[in-house]
Length: 199
Image 1 (cartoon, rainbow, N blue to C red):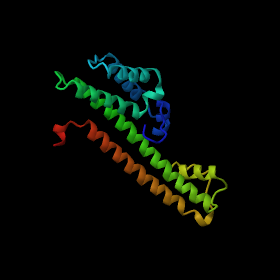
Image 2 (cartoon, rainbow, N blue to C red):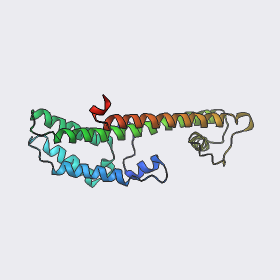
Image 3 (cartoon, helix red, strand yellow):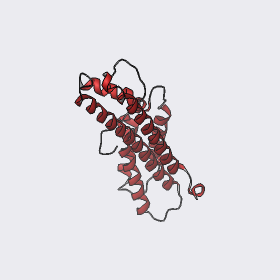
Image 4 (cartoon, rainbow, N blue to C red):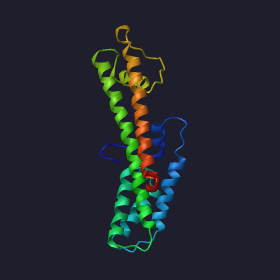
């Protein structure tokens, strides 16, 4: 998606979004968009093969379909077509380019936010390990993840002198996840809200 490793399959997105979340509708939307790209006639000969290749790869490989970079590239190719045949007789191709870009941005934001949270969890885990609060790095990362996401299993606990850090990390996790959810919602709303309603 971006320069960082990204979960590329809808099952990986399901793990990121949490248990019980259905990514079937997301996969359906991405498949339908790829089919539209395959069926859309392109009159610019040097753009068509790349768009057809990208759309075909999206349909064949879920890993390609779930990547934001795929949709950014497709949006760029459609934008090249727009520039090449300016002015257009219809605006459907604009909407298609806009849609591909919106899908890429939404997937990119989602993965970027999750990776930021993983970094925050890792910082807490490194601190726990550095202060010898937990036995090994795996336990420190596990405890940090459970505490940050406020799951609170209770199978691992901090030593008595460090136990006040767990609620502090839990509070930090609640605030950061809430901030991320708000940022993601605002971004997606800005992408999909028509300009007439924003003004």
